[in-house]
Image (tube, rainbow, N blue to C red; front, side):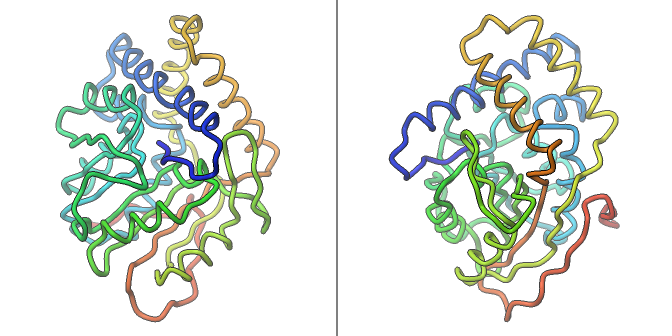
Length: 281
């Protein structure tokens, strides 16, 4: 789910691989052992039980009928598959970690899974109506290379949709492998690059009960069957750290969309995830 760091700290890239690569395969293995399919399988491979609200908030701001969506740093492919089945678009899941790619291919055979980084995707320029960055920017010290790649991939007037964890105040700060930006800093960066920012939501998404039950069952299975595997302790420790930060109120969930080469920027419309309504068809 991460792009190559450009900060001279390769050990942090290795740490991110420990956290996201093999655990993605464990989630698919857990889903198979538990007999999960359909939306429960998507939930099993996704980051957490609050993701349906975050994803629905993003979809509200997407074009009515996007033809092609690129999910950069797609991990095990859960959000990518949700977007594919919800929007009907062709979705390309771009992921550098081989274990996560294998997990996505195994779980979602109709998903187009590509080997690539968020700052170097194996796609021609100007092809995507929408680029998704889900949980990616908080893993980067420098977001500029990824945003340059977003600009290259998007069609003129295409949109980038971002869902991530953000600093709860106006200060950008780091913890472990994460950089938690303020939503204000990210908006300023996007506007400086010529994007029109809209549909900003910051708050605590309401967990989906079904996804919560699936997440607990999958985590319990991993604890019972994969606790002796390399990377397990790093994965579990990272989840505890992020959980502690969320409970402390230091970080909050957030999502926004921005249009490339749009009209003059308007004031972003703020909304809480819980207030979003499903798109009408």
